[in-house]
Image (cartoon, rainbow, N blue to C red):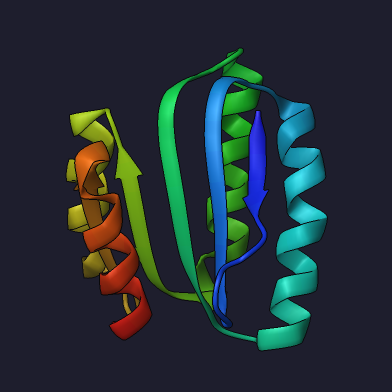
Length: 119
């Protein structure tokens, strides 16, 4: 399930990913991303990813397509996760032009939130 965090300061879009993530979750998320892009053009992205898995290869493919489609509008990303490989990928994503990204462990949520607010 993908849940939007409603009390994020502008221009930060925040989500929580838990449980089994499906293609339908991305079908609901993409219009929200598109609305946010129309409102802000570029923005910051905060995600908490814990106890989740993609339900199928199709869901994983939707995640990749979503990332590629919206990457140009995201200039800063903080990813909080219990999966070290996701944290490592996030840390290396800063090689992408115009993107600053940092991964955090689940016990670093407060630091992640402070970082993204000031980055």
